Length: 425
Image 1 (cartoon, rainbow, N blue to C red):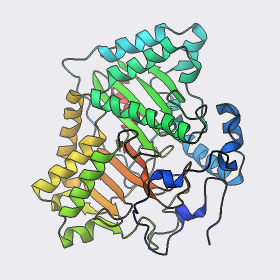
Image 2: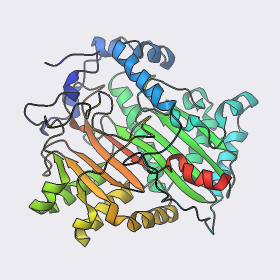
Image 3: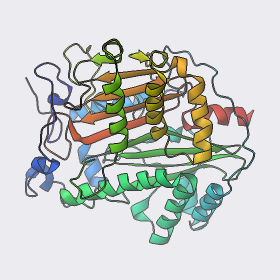
Image 4: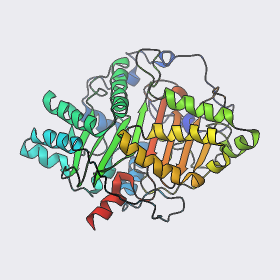
């Protein structure tokens, strides 16, 4: 029996059994609450602080926050398959270091007063890297909130982000932020969800060849950028949207990756499909207890999951032909899109070197008729795409218009920590 946990969450999102959910013809607009519905109206007069305090009140949220706090309090180890960290990350200094990211970071910092600089700056190996989260309510306050800064300072912070990422990666981050504002307008809560409802922080001393980084996080956007000896790491990354598909109102955020995913899945032979498809549905009753999470649903690499043990599952990439590997590789490269092109090439070389240890797993139908979950996992990448039930929309089952994606670098190089540790020796 479905139980309503609060106005937004019911146990339907984590209840297995019954018929597999399918993609219908409905639009996200068919799942909009009326603006005067108490689900929305109760929050309309609140700022983010009061909203966050009230959102944390329910007992099940308190239990969730306590579990996240326990994970946050653990020392950073890294995502592994069995609890053992492998030595797979080699820091090789970059010859032609791009000075633009660190210069932009210094310009941003130069616009801050002393109190703001103290609030925004942390050591490069600070545990505050791991305080990010993706709900719209605030859990940890790390750095400065963009909406509380002057426009010139916000522009400088975003210029730092732009200088650090590829043009197409920056566009994706800004589109996710734009979709957050679009959602805020749809539900009449632009004060709570807008393009500036994000936290920004600096780590270390920005320099072209030193060890430093920045973090930007908030609702459906969390990006950690690290530069060590000129080598960049952008991980963890959490990008999502509700709605991710907006009937032409805004560009669909993950259309390319979903197209590649379905192209790959449709190419599998019956034997390959049997190996890759771990569960027949995203709510398959064969899932073990605990596999579905009330906030994360199927994805395993979200907030506070820095030390998660994630065994390989699915089909080994060595069982793919070269064309299929090229498609799988394109999915991974899309996950690393935020990296500047030269940095992405270095990272993809690491991915290629571990082809024999790369696995792809799939939950759901492979023909595009159902919500699906996709994971690509190797010693140097873990990336996911998952269709979700509604939070601010009323659909209680996963739908194509609420999508979460994650990216991590296993074995201790989230937040560039393996590189930072090597650099600090």
